[in-house]
Image 1: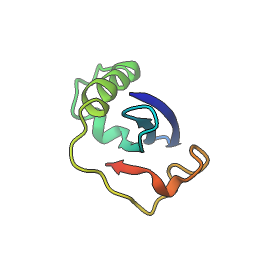
Image 2: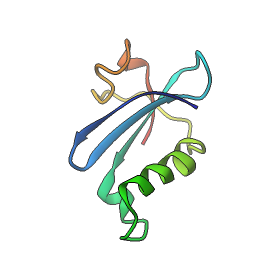
Image 3: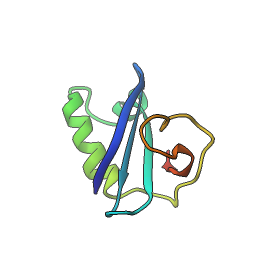
Length: 87
C-alpha cells in the first residue's frame, strides 16, 4: 500500500487515499469516527483506531468500490473524480 493523502473533514469524519501498487488507481475510504469507534472497546485510542483502519480496513477492503460525486479528495490528488471509494 502507498499512502496518497488524507484529511479531516470535520470533528467526526476523515478521508484516507492510497494506492494498492505503484501507478495503480487511487482508492479512497471515508470514515465516520463515532460510528467506527463504537465497534471497538471505548478505551481504544486514536492511534489504535488508526492501526485498525490500516490493518483491517485498508489492507482488506470489502466491495468493488465506486465513483462518488463528493469533494472529499479535492486538493489531495490531481483528478479527485478518478478516486474509487470504499465507504
